Image 1 (tube, rainbow, N blue to C red):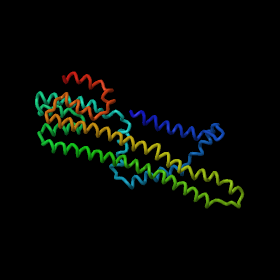
Image 2: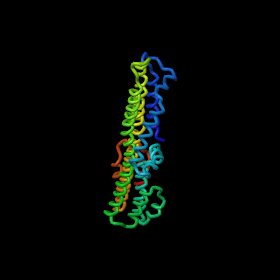
Image 3: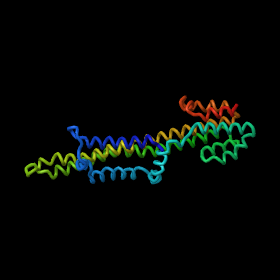
Image 4: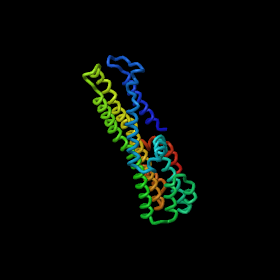
Length: 276
């Protein structure tokens, strides 16, 4: 569970609501006055137009993947580079004792399609350069697809404030068209009408910076984590094909991680005893 994302979004909305309730004299507004920030027409214009533009800008497969995006976003611990390093060291030990063909059975047991593909490439005794080219191309294409997904939320983040402003203009036009300063109470309604018109701008900013923006950032972080793990797999598999020593392989793969990631993991230290 991506607890930081949940806490951040809830906290942002909570602070905003408290700010809405805070009166100019330091007191709190009544619940009825909170309804000043709720307007059905503003919601319809801002949200409806934003999603309509997304439908017009992206293909159906990208749009139908939105539930999958949220699943990836909420899974903060899906990628474990230390576990992958331990697995690669295990594969290196088997390969040194029994040869590369012994890795075929272990490869069939892998649940990660990319990891399995990389193992089978070296088991089939493919040329090292060609095998690396295939692996790296897979990483590049996967990262490009992930960037397209994050780009959809970037697009939504950019158009939501624009349609918030469109809603404001619509409200102002209607206000000016219906205003009669010579009539009874005509000028006194300007403030109320202006406040209603500005609500759509508020909705656009909320959508952009409290919903769509964090989603795009989180998806890019998941992509960076996945790419790191895949690069570790590629380097590990190619080293195994070259006959690298398991202990040396571990030290080599650890260079992909920060010092904190290396020191915080206890599993790596335990596995080193097995390498010796």
